[in-house]
Length: 76
Image (cartoon, rainbow, N blue to C red):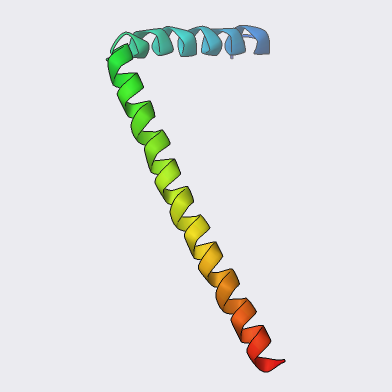
């Protein structure tokens, strides 16, 4: 029987890497990139949401600290 030689490891790996980047390039051509105005608007929304959530966490922390101090002083 004839022996079937398979390609060496380097050739197989290099072929896979080339295929990956070829497919990556074709997929990136399909992407609809946002405009700078959309990016700025989305970034502003994220910053505002982070600030609002931060204020709520700060308020909860302040109220919880006040409540815990009141409980501790009540039992002392």
